Image: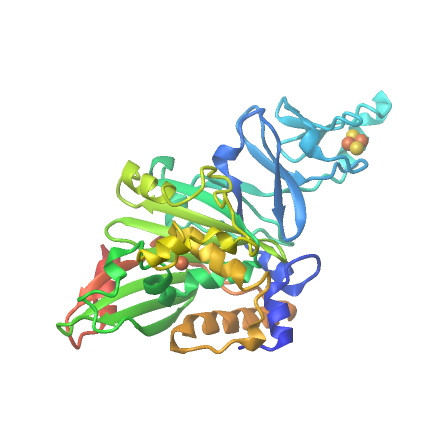
Length: 408
Ligand code: FES
Ligand SMILES: [Fe+2]
């Protein structure tokens, strides 16, 4: 449970809101690489309640600017995209994908060059990795780019999808950190976690180990024979959640703040050993809408009970909603755009969420006092972070087995 002030502090990200200012210090994905074509249409990106324009120049290099033209604010979504630059259609000012103003044809010839140098074009550091275009919107020194496992791989090994959900960013993130719901909400989609013979008890026991980058959470479920089934998830500050999958395949989610009432919910599927198989891609795509740049479509609302199929529920489907991510989205939206955390009643499986909130509150305090936000002041080998599911015999510590697997 949080106080009203704490809830406001953790959720608000627009303008000068402290959380938004702090979160802008981290790199985040802005859009899928495929959404940008060289010399193609500029694309609007919205983050922290601000609008940006993204485009890919003739040379293939992506760039992100403020959407409004620095001259008099015409939208650069309307701009021509050619010669590695956007040309504003209002007065023809031209902005290169290197972040420099190339030409200001409305100025007298003899002073054009000097004038161009002074144009306050807002261009942001951009990087492409993991089939995504990343941006840094912070102030001061640009931090090291997070070389998470999927950011170190060839494009064949990784695939990213994004959906826009009408809830605050923290609501999206908390759903990904809350692993206790997996065996309930998603039970009709996950055979192994159905209340079958294998588990003694559906309620897992949790071990939460703080890490320099976030939290490692092990959900332990006792089996009938006394052994334990272990699912290790990793929360990586500020918005990543690694969800374990069998073998070398893994999934990471990222919850990016679009504004106070919207989140960009990313799903990154990757295989550390081989190209991502068609099966894995199809499995995910069978659960979502057709547009990989916004797959939450068709999208239900409160008025039509989020398109929940009550007939299907009678036939045995638990949630009446097709697709794991969609199940998450409707539950999140049903909580209202910003969940009232003053009215919660947390249980033992909410420890990870409670820890994460405390971590954010501490980080906000540090940031207010001029210190770097959580995990930005230390060197972290992000590529080493991985998750797993495994079994351990009775009376053994899962951490030993986890270390063994992590070494491989
Ligand atoms: S508003 Fe863009 S060039 Fe004038
Ligand atoms: Fe979920």
